Amino acid sequence: MTHSPAYAEMPRGNWFTRTEAWLDERGKGAWIALMVLGFIFFWPAGLALLAYMIWSKRMFNRTGTSMTCGSRRARGTMTRMRSSGNAAFDSYKADTLRRLEEEQEAFEAYLQRLREAKDKAEFDQFMNDRARRSGSDDTTVDA
Image (cartoon, one colour):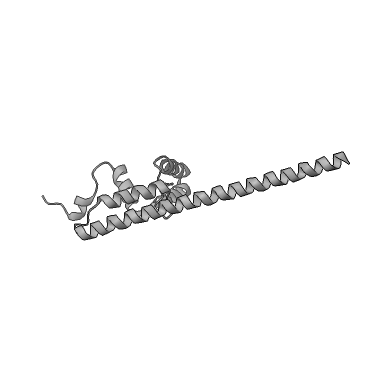
């Protein structure tokens, strides 16, 4: 007995595993639509789906541009590990990624120095204002 190609691609397991895989293929929007329908037709089902989405971290999956520095580095590592099959391109890609990471680290160091300079300037201003206030208080008391 032969199976159709669509059947071969379908994940094995119970109905829950197959449904979960089907929803994952369609993205977060499908999960949210199912949750809303659950709330409309039977609110405990919607609540259960919401709890499952939060518990499985599907609600807070970051697939957009707002990645943390650590996840950007991890993504870069994963990209470097895959070979395209073209040695020249892989070498160029590795050099470009290394250069970009160095530039990013230099820029982050520059931003840190700017923050430190701003903090020092604000602190110095505070100390000068405080010295001026205490100096003017001393002259009014003496007079």
